[in-house]
Length: 365
Image (cartoon, rainbow, N blue to C red):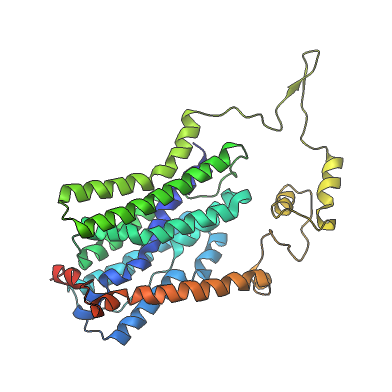
């Protein structure tokens, strides 16, 4: 199989696990009732949860210092401890345990590793993985309502054990490897992955509406969740197709035969033309964002002290660029306001007469 595409399919599952922060509204009413929190304390708890899930500077640095499996191991252990403490508190196994936050170690590992494996399509890969993180809230809600019967303690037990299991299962597949080959089917593969993600989102919306409007039995609920699992596994169809039906592409270094039948090896570029062509990158203003890093990787161009757009920046070099602060501002204002509403969604629903967390609290007793 193609390792980059296998890694991308495995990253889908890790990114779904990384969206566990979105489950806070599902168990926050139970925390408030069982632990005796007021609304202010619960809000601080949600802020701690968001900081632990979204401050990714430490795991990103670790991704450049250690192999991905080591970073995933830290994320698995942090999730086990953090959600395990919450489970013990909500299930009233023990009393008054402190709250542990878990960092987004596994999510950062997926981003960094897959961007390295797809250097020509970094934006596409980032958008796909972020899209799956955004879909994780609906996945958890589906499992919470159809399999766990609205039990907050069962949900926390699932997070305590399920996230480490996913991280351990994906450790071998999420790893740096040779970049994906450039061929005509690459964009079609990305479109297929995006299509399965949109199909998953539409399916989750449809089943959520059906669950609220109709009384579904356990068998139908389990079938619905099984289809969700199938859609999450759909990206693995790409490397499976490449293995079963390999395409015969002519590689640049493939030998060409002359008229006499002898075989001559023709490199893509001669050293002189390579130096002239690649050396002119820094003199031209109209430069592709992927040409320079590829030229640097091939050793044809020496990297200047100040990296240009499209190259890898160190953190001190990054924070002085507007390209860093503009997305940071958008993310801070847009994502921050959404998370604030999300953390208080259960209480907003209760104030409007929607017993969003009542069933989950009763099921924990």
